[in-house]
Image (cartoon, rainbow, N blue to C red; front, side, top):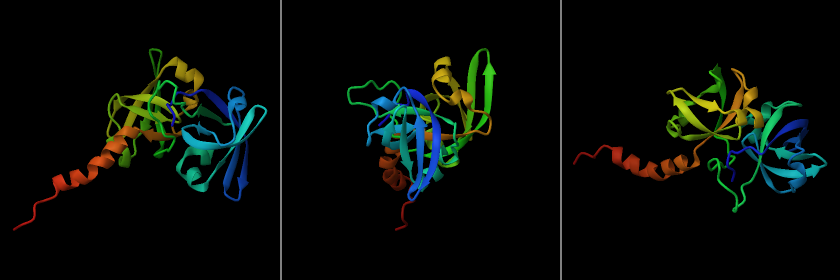
Length: 207
């Protein structure tokens, strides 16, 4: 489990095909020394397992399904990524509950700069519209954000200077792909209520 509070940025050093997918070597001087093989780490919002470490880098193995469903399949050498270690039970939940299981990828519609503010408009895929609410939480490339404005087909998030400095979101441009994970609690509530909603809206049978 993660919080969406990015601890460091990493840089993709190497990408190698393997029999089971792809191995990614990531440079992360701030975190590498504290990582152990088997530990969970979120790479731009994708929960992965540390396969090994060396000096200032670590490597992870990514299976084909994850490559297809996330932006990791599009990463090229030199790309920067957001990194967060798994939340310790004694840690503070400063963001929101993030599983690291990406729901979908989407594209940045526009980037707006106004009166010192930095806004991103991101397309909202139809199958996930019910999970987006005004002022609700959403995870974009591993960053916990608040939906500031909402339309039927897009949402806007406002980025503070700290977020721009500590994450990769300041590098995004119109057309950039991002990983989206919607609120975990909302998804559980929908799953629990779905059978009852079907019964409620079911038409009564004729006698």
